[in-house]
Amino acid sequence: MCSKAVASWAAIEQGKPLHAHVIKLGFECTVYVGSALIDMYAKCGMVKDACKEMIDSGILPTSVTFVGVLFACSHAGLVEEGRNFYKLMVYTYGIPPSVEHCACMVDLLGCAGFLEEAETFLLDSPFREEPGIWGSLLAACGVYNNSDVGSRAAQHCLWLEPRHSSTYTLLSNIYASSKLWNDVTRIRDLMKEKGVEKEPGFSCLRLGTE
Image (cartoon, rainbow, N blue to C red):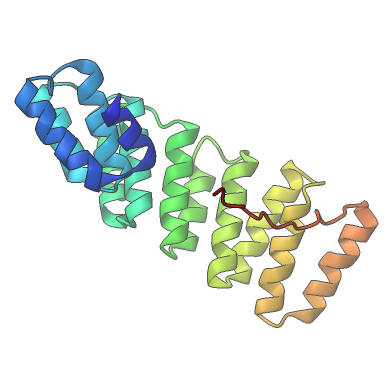
C-alpha cells in the first residue's frame, strides 16, 4: 500500500527507503509490490530504474507498461528516450499503440517544442480524430507562440468540438502573443457568430485550519 501511495504522489524521496525495506523483507518480486515499484519509478521520471525492476522480474511489458514509461518520459522531458520506447513497443514487442500512448507522445513532443513532429505524429496515428490530443498540442503551441501549428491544431479541435470555448481562447491568445491582431479579431467575431461564450475564470482560496 505504501509503494502504491508513493507512486500516486511521485514522491521518490519516500519511495527509495520503502524500496530498500521491501528488499529486506523479500517482497520485491511479488506482483503487487513489483508493479507498484515500477509505477513509482516511472511516475518519478526514473525510466531506467522502472525498466530494471521489470527486466529483473522476467515480466514482459504490456500496453499498460508502456503507458507508464511514456508518461514518465513526458514528465521528465526525455524526448529521445520516449521516441525509442515507442519504437520498442511497436516494432519489438508488437504492441499496437492506444490513444493513451499517442497522447503521451504528443504531450512529450509538444512540451519539448517539437510541435511539427507532434503534429505529424498525430496525423499519422489512428487517433487523429481525438479532440483532447489536438487540444494538448494547441496548448503546447500557446507555450511556444507557434501560430502556424496552433492554427491547424485549432481547426481540428473546432471541427471535432465546434462549441468548445477553450479552443477559441487558446488560439486567440496565440495570435495575440504573435501580435496578429486581425486574427484575434477574427476569432472573437467567430465566437460571437457561433454563440460561443468564454467560460468565466475563477480562483480557489485554500483556508488553513488552526
